[in-house]
Length: 384
Image (cartoon, rainbow, N blue to C red; front, side, top):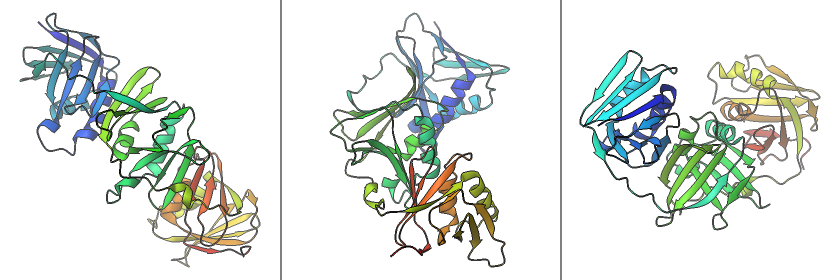
């Protein structure tokens, strides 16, 4: 008898390529295998063998062997990856599983994989307790922006390699990320956080996986009742589950208390066009001057940007839309400045709030409610 599956190649490719992020750094045999599972309700999913990452294949149409009420097939991942990588996004993949063979066919391609292991019973789901649910309609965009611009990838400081969900002093639930050079904080809409948890971190690996999805409107975070360090992150589009990923999170590691480093001094600001500022910075980024310091000379309605390391390089002018400061001079590292400005929509404005020479500059704008950047040098003419 035969079990068959028909599925959109686009969805299968997306699941396989995302699963590759989980598996590619592993060298042992079991870690390089995946499981294709069809449960008794006809739901088809692809997952790694340790059940850390699970992708529901929502377009799959399944027909189980009449003698089975479940199928769990173990497949060599590299072979599956090579097959789907060659497919177009507009085709359909037909799979047939019989005896110990998986037969996959699409377009003019066909492949047979032998020695497929079949199992009749799946392990029971672990007992989990939901500790956080986020129903923010812009969650996908916020996570992508935070991950690309603010999450550290320096594994020597693993606690910064994450997005942190925390309960702020004002009682609101916020998300934050920092790489120790720049920092961002955003409010989250429609969120519930268990009272026993002051914060929950979304690790780098989880962020990397969920940024592969263009849209989702809900994330549920649960913890294993027996193993309080085993967290499960599941994202949904409506009622459709897109990804479930479990990972150990060290309960003794805590994200830096970002509210303690936010300046509370009175500030004055300038308002700039994001697009105009990015165009001015491009002249420096194109020359790979990331580590160089740029001087901002502020006067009236003009911002003059110059490179301290190259006096012969022509300065650039950016119009100031609103100037509360008057005359002012400040200096930033190009890489950190560009990192923050690039996270804002081009067709928007940002406000740079400044106070004393030993204080961070706080930036306000669309999408990112609050960002923070330390200056390299400040000559504040109105400070005491």
